[in-house]
Length: 241
Image 1 (tube, rainbow, N blue to C red):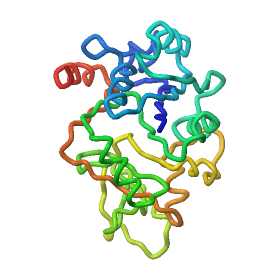
Image 2 (image 1 turned 90 degrees about the vertical axis):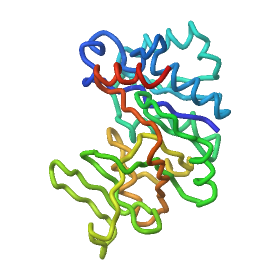
Image 3 (image 1 turned 30 degrees about the vertical axis):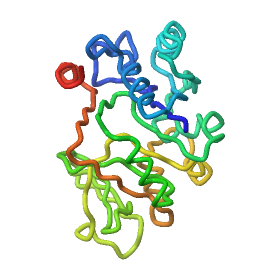
Image 4 (image 1 turned 60 degrees about the horizontal axis):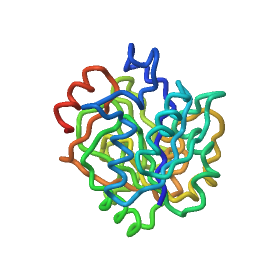
């Protein structure tokens, strides 16, 4: 199985660091987020990674070359011409990922002690198109799941926006869970997505969830940190040694 690390973002929340560097190279206890995640994947036997690049792409490529992929085989999905967000980035990398039936996709700025073996096992057992790691925790945005843990919608608590593609469902019938930025997909997903250009994986999942099986894997209680702000780097240094 390959992993796709989403590392092309501008990292605006990490300014001023990202004025001169990509967020993937922000350091926690002397190791970049990129290295943390590659080495974490290795502990679960995932030694092939595809990394998308845009913002200060040369710095990421040079770091990987100098460090020989931190011990993993790696390929670059080049988005220098235009950043495509998570969904567009996945489609852009399709040729590098589709040789396997299953792929792990994760944001490079997420640090977690999540048991990826359990996530992958549930994905395989449920025969889902995609399995999303989620938690019961405070957030402004939530995926909405039915009692069978199948994705049915999405809501933004700050704006009040709610999207439930399948008719006949009410928000009150669904359980909100916060997305962890980690998912396992069947690479067939990339053939089913009709969106093009710049779009998020959230939009892709919502476009498919009325007809396709997209499931939750609830790992509430696990340590998870979105290292997107300078203060979260300090918090990460305390939690991840």
